[in-house]
Length: 207
Image (cartoon, rainbow, N blue to C red; front, top):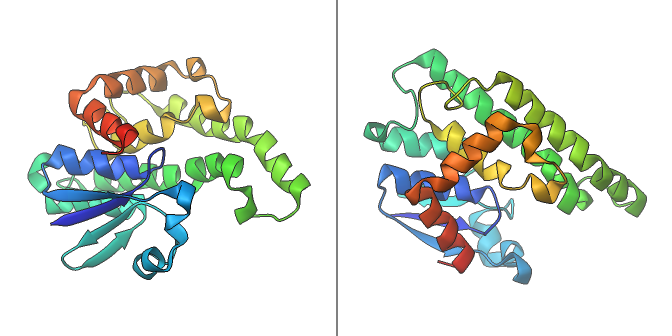
């Protein structure tokens, strides 16, 4: 059985939703960030990065959302969460998910975790001040390229799950989602999906 280590309000939500959507047999373990459990010796032995998600599989441990999402897709190909039959579309999926991971999420992290990049309080404050612009610019790019109804066009994929996860943070990052009507509509439709709503509620309640 797969085991997902997650924390609420993190990108681990994307993996959690994907596992549920493909019908995987899995269990979850909540990592308490308030208690710094991600920095405990036990957790660091499993994931030296001290972050979530961490997915324990029969072959070993996986980290990093884009890699985990592709693993889930290829383990459960019949679920159709990735265009595995089209090498170009699969590359497009990975390009989009990589952008979310390497650029959008990093811009968001400057608001809460500036000490990863600087020790000077003034530098950290400057990063925090920049977040509405840097996150907003990232979503503006996505909005321009979004021709829907899904990220890859007519095909629903992990891109939609991952985008939804990061779009949850727009308001807290000081970005008005009304600037991005396509993304706002996408987020609404994802929230209305019963399965997605179930997982969001489970994480919120500690399930």
